[in-house]
Length: 77
Image 1 (cartoon, rainbow, N blue to C red):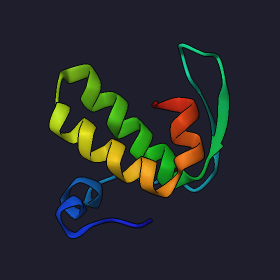
Image 2 (cartoon, rainbow, N blue to C red):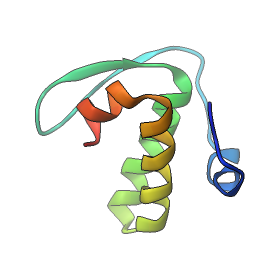
Image 3 (cartoon, rainbow, N blue to C red):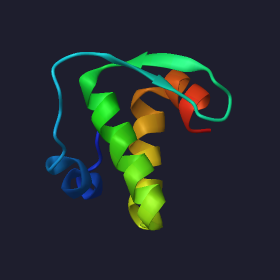
């Protein structure tokens, strides 16, 4: 995963699984299979969004879009 120095604190504590997962955009209904790292970051972004932690949402979106641009366009754009 490509991460800038100032982003390392955000992803350092992520619980990363061992298997790919299919994630569905709740608005479009489109799905994408994500690797474990992408799933963990997606979950962090959506959780931060739910509690109004928009600084971490923005940082997470930057990391996700840089590493998985196609999945970003389907799930988070």
